[in-house]
Amino acid sequence: MRRMGALAGAVALAACGLGGWLAAPVAGAADGPVVHVRLHDFKIRNQDPVTSSGDVTLHVRNAGPSTHEINVDRTSLADGDLPLGPDGLTVDEDAPQLHRIGSIEVLRLGETGDLTLHLPPGHYVLWCNLEGHYLGGMHASLDVKASR
Ligand SMILES: [Cu+2]
View (cartoon, rainbow, N blue to C red):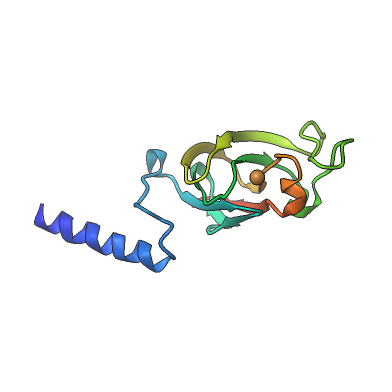
């Protein structure tokens, strides 16, 4: 028990070194890799842009100040090159180049969400499609390599 306590303290200290937004260590599903993502107006910062394949848990925190969502799509497109829909303000989610893997539809200010997805090797984009948010810069890439 004492030993466990010391270990937890070390983890908390390391988390502070990352800027403080990583509040607690996260256990990925089935001990798969964890990808730490931070949303804010209007950026998506992916702290782990390269991860290994398998059951990957995205640990997503919305630092606000407004509500956001996060979509995860497999695509060959760069994260900044997604096709816009007819309104010119949002990405066309039905575009044939985009393959939806999962999403968190609503993350309010300060909320954290975990999304566990089975990800084969490939290129993925993380993005928010609330009106104007993608154009504002809310996109990031995630590259998944074969785990060995
Ligand atoms: Cu957004």
